[in-house]
Length: 609
Ligand code: ATP
Ligand code: MG
Image (tube, helix red, strand yellow):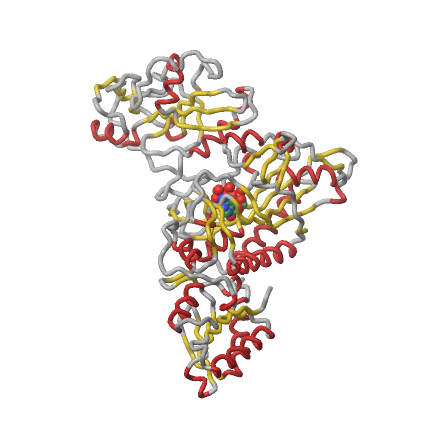
């Protein structure tokens, strides 16, 4: 990396005003400080200052990946559709999630722009890995990914083109996979510490695959603007993404109803209204929510979920459960889960649905008969609802509810599932004395034990010690390099601008010449810049023909950790050294600048344990 740069010769245009396109402080500051420019939604140019930041992050990532035996490579970004069909993900990625940019080449062959690389790497492993003697293997790359995010936003946080480090490991057995996963865990922790970030590792949703052993964790940088919700216990024994989190729900109230009755409850189509009307706790109500699942064979299934009135549905958990039921419907995968809104209900063409008053035994005749629609409603009950006695629920008639109902009496108990959303205030499942708290985070990294998910459908096998053919065990591990850069800004800035952690700052020091027409200031600065660069200290030299105030403002805005000013104290053979983070300024002799800065930078780069 270039050691020094004259600002007067750099493409450097800062903005005084907050750009309208940005909401988050980090996004505003990166735009204002000439780090990024937007080309179109979710697509950004990384200007020279940011590119240095990204290279520094990449270098830290590289060192930590190499330290655990990772081998760097570069995989193709243009990927043929066939390999996605082999893994069974083409439909999911192009239709259901629709996150993959797909196109046709001139021969009419379908291609995609890589949103991730499991398919490419599994194919490689199938071709090249033959024997247990070659295992384990870990490969990684740092590269641009493409994802057609439905809502690209917050600058680099959610781009449609962004830089990711993705690593993949292959193993002879699960034990070896677990070992590499642990190495990755430690490497990721070191990467984030070295980048100067405060973070928390949380249990993450692993999708429908693998069951409980399919470990998956996310590295969350803590920030109030984070898109993810984290639930954790104050003692640190438990932390999970809300998508995955488990907890003990609050106790249900005692039911005042002793016998089954149908009551007129006009205008009570929501839980709140019903609880108010009956003057009861929502914990006594079984609410029945109607969903529609779409499977990859085109079959639609109406799903009626019963859950306790005070609880929310965790749709990630529900979707995972429905994915596991795919076989029951002769399908491979769940493509989509949606609430059955009026539009979907109309398409069923059956009897009208008493929205707000649905009972667990809503008749199948509500669906009508239609091709590609399962004729029966799939009925599920969350544990919270399944445990209730003498409960209140809908009656299938608008304006009426039933009270004092019981499973096995008025309604058969449906298949019981765990799909409730854990909430702050719930007790921890592991330690019921601990109450879950909530925080927001930015997902920077994700490590995942994939197990056999790709090697089975793609037939990536090896020969074991006994000479028999076995599928490869696999893990994958991602870090959002460009997202990390912005997350660092989100975590570290003040009213005047960015405060880069030293390890990933574009330059270590900026030498500001308040008055460029003063030959002494210029010559001292020039010599300093040379000496600093020679000592390996990356130096930006503000030699622009601008007022001193403008230069100081810009230096603060772009967040260079140290500033040297060749000002009045030159007469005493001194310059001013100020620190961006603390704002502290001292005057030091010119000949001490290099050693002083070197010491401070080294101290700042030391990796905390
Ligand atoms: P998210 O839940 O935020 O959409 P993801 O689960 O799709 O992310 P992964 O597929 O696990 O993400 O990708 C690995 C890493 O890549 C993420 O942890 C994140 O840091 C980064 N990343 C994912 N999507 C984007 C994006 N659209 N823009 C920038 N970085 C991204
Ligand atoms: Mg994720």
